[in-house]
Length: 247
Image 1 (cartoon, rainbow, N blue to C red):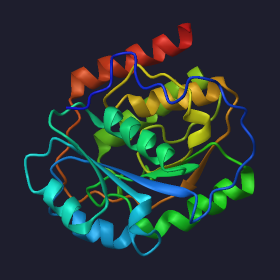
Image 2: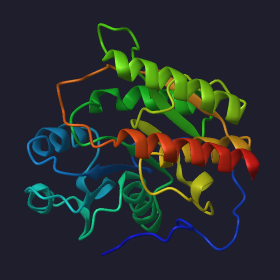
Image 3: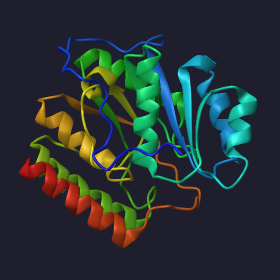
């Protein structure tokens, strides 16, 4: 079992000087948190490998109960295999840690259920290069034709709250398709291990005057099962926003 402590992951002992860097196809990893995604993984990894070699791909299997682990092993991507489910945030932090160990400077995060298209990779890199961004987030279409109504409401509300808390315009705070500057994260400590990690990391980057930008992506909902627990994750979201505002 590899679960991070409640205090979160500390990427380095000393704070490093942040220099302007640009993402490219060699210095960028792809971190994929995996949970019960065996029917999606072959197509997903095939799409990712159109742009990146195997050594750039890091899958973190969060104690899946299907054949996800075996598919990752068969495809020979870098695999972190967890025996106990600890949450998406924990998986992402472990993936970032492994990418940093291998010397990568940037990392994409992409969900394992085909809601994100690898074909959008070039636009993320283009946006990062153009504006020297520390975080590029996919911007989905919030129209009722593309997204379920309850998701529109929750995403609109949480994005407004995160915008107020971060003092930056955050137009899609919940999208997991992102490109991170790993050097900005190197010495950060996190409280979150589940979905609210993606909110916490926006707030921490904003505190350091990091630059957050957005690039449009296709909005895809194919009836995939959601592993978000409504009341628990709302509570966790509120707690992490309040914590970051106080500290």
